Length: 96
Image (cartoon, rainbow, N blue to C red):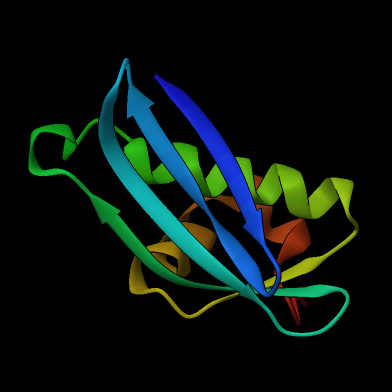
């Protein structure tokens, strides 16, 4: 499975593809020069339980690290993963 980031002027999305088939997408928006808001995650039914959402989140976290950005996870899935996955909390906004 390949995960791609497609950036737009005020945000973008990570998309998961299994060959030519879409497996899922995670959208984010910019909230200033150094802040991203993850606002939505969707995974196609046949890919549920295969960690597609987590792979997309990791890709966005990787991008945030490279750009020295922080993330606010408004999406319930992303928020739950930030609570569960300690290794990605370094990009969490207000991580104490």
